[in-house]
Image (cartoon, chains in turn blue, cyan):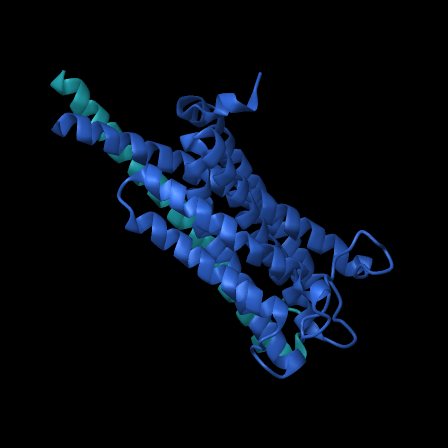
Length: 241
Length: 52
């Protein structure tokens, strides 16, 4: 069995439709556990006080904002190389989820930054590249909406996605490239010395798992919606003609 | 019930409130659109079958 079988829209819908409710409810349950754990059952940080609880929202949403764009990049490259419509529609379906994750990361970052840094916003390399990534998301969605022919829209948005990937990478690694700015280096690391304390790490892991699963469930559901919408438009055109 | 959040209560509660609202909005909008498109497609397919 090849993965390319799922490039067939019928096969994609038949396979994913029964999975989506399970994925959705599991992700909601995991998120409830992770956020309840983080909010109610973790201690305050010695320096940051109770604002450390924002960590369980800020870090997973920022990770998903970047990962959603990387997923869109892979789907766009598959479209450009193999011309599978499902991959172009999957990229299109992921963009609004990425926007919500970016808004969430920017909002929680600002509201966390104000008491810790004394400012809502700074033109710091990581924050600035994240804001540019958000603008790329908006441009991506606007470009899909502006072009009537779906193949042309998929081509142009794929190119935009490749260009925007620079900022997706920068928003993750900018703090390593430029050793300046307010934002601290990555809080999570596989190196135990650099990683946050276990008491914060375990609930954060649960929240990240919940966000990832929610993203997968939403992408599958929204891709199926885009496939149905495409079929509906094709049928309507055939009936009119 | 709510833990003592000290002087940062507003910031923490606002972060959780807005984030949960955004997540629920995203899930709700996705489910609503999915159902709407499925229903419309079923109507179009039924009309096509009837027209054959």
